[in-house]
Length: 221
Image 1 (tube, rainbow, N blue to C red):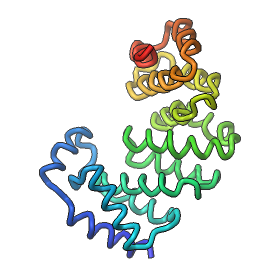
Image 2 (cartoon, rainbow, N blue to C red):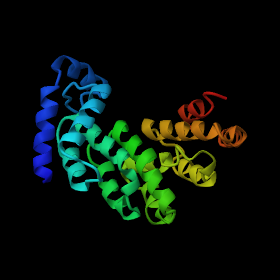
Image 3 (cartoon, rainbow, N blue to C red):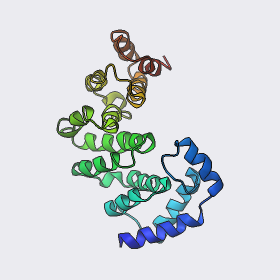
Image 4 (cartoon, helix red, strand yellow):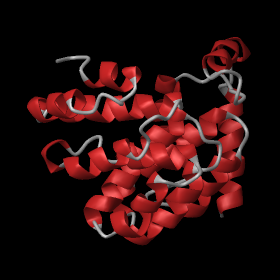
């Protein structure tokens, strides 16, 4: 059934491809991935059509995994659409599966979505995932797992474990990695909307934070 669905999805997406748009989209993503040239609003409408035609009404892990393996970036975006639509059907045990998605075809567009919308959701379901998984990700050799650990609380607001966030950020003090320092600042900036004084105090008492992290953290304060 999955292979049939993928066949129909590919056929439909191919009818909407726009080579002229794909040039700009590929350039924006630094030519890391090919694109069909389908904009986000177009993809949303296509997704609705696919859902209706193929009668997709639940979380299909095999289909999402298959979409993730396709070359053009729109297939990963479509998989993300379905993950978000049916995320309430996810189980804490799905964290290993989501881990595999994070480390495949990794770039900020997929990783940030999976961190904030999917991993964040799973941890709220089962906080023990922090000790059993996220703590390890924070110091993993894979930079995208590090970024996920820093960003998974992005939507938590008052539920944010600030001590945990600070711990993950401080584990990367001295890092020259743009995506880590940017994520640290972004996470702090988001939490500053809930507790600005705590973020200001942290930044002021940690002079070794990168300038990028500090700038991002205090951007709206």
